[in-house]
Image (cartoon, rainbow, N blue to C red; front, side):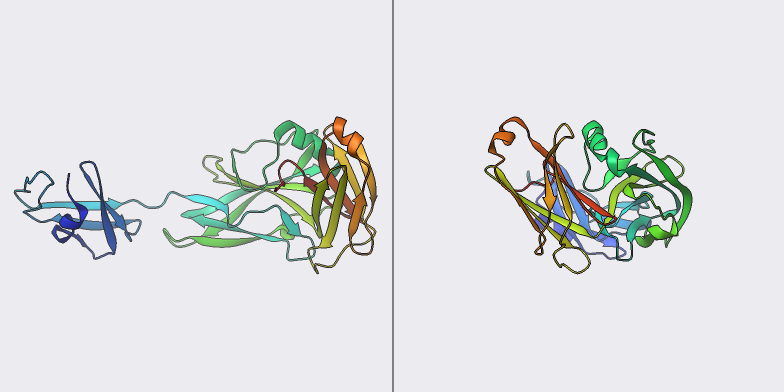
Length: 282
C-alpha cells in the first residue's frame, strides 16, 4: 500500500491530463480527464516509497489504452407529459452510433387502466429489449431506421419530431422505443401529448383537482373530471369551474371501501390522467 499524496510526485502521464490519485488497499487509482480512444504513457519513477517503507527499485512504464465509449442511445431528459401545442419533439442522446431502430406503439385511451394494472407504469426512461405491445391494448404505428451519426466518442443530441413519424386521429399513450439495430437493446419513453396539467389533493373524505394549461398556465374551465378506483369503476365525476378547480366532498364512507387509483380529465378532444400511487407526494 502507498500514500496517494506521497506517490503523486512519482507518477506522470503523457500526454498531460488533469487527474487525482487515490488508494484502495494495494491499488493506486488514477482518476481524471483521460479521453476515450486515446493511448497514454504512464511512468512511475524509481524510489516510490510504500507505507511499510519498501521502495520501488526501478522505474515502471506502461502504455494505457483507453477504449472507445460503448455505442449507446438514450433520451436526453425524463418525463412523460409532452405539450400537444408545442413542438411535439423529444431529444435523443447518442454516442458512437450511426443509426438506430425507431418503433412507436400506441395504447388506446380506454385501455390505459388495463396497461397499468398488468405491467405497472414507468414515468421515466426504461431499458427496452424490443418487446411487442399486446394487441389487446393497442398497436404499433411506426417501425423505421433513423440516422444518428456524430463524431467518434462525442455525444450527439438528435431531435425527434414526432409529427414527422405519425399523426393519429385516435390519440392515446405512446411508447417511443429506440434500439441499437445489431442487438435490439435500447431505451423507451412513454409519452402523452396533452395540454392538460393535473394537480390533485386528497383530504379526509374529499378531493380537490386543479387543471391548468401546459401552453399558457391558465386554468382550464369546464373540463370533465373522473375519479376511478382500483377496479376501474367510477367513484365520482364532475366539471372544473372557471378557476380550473373541481371539489368533491362526502367521500369518507366510499373511501373506507374503495381506494382511488387514477384521475382522468377530458376537455374537447384533449385527454390526460394522473396515477395516485406513482405521482404521490406527502
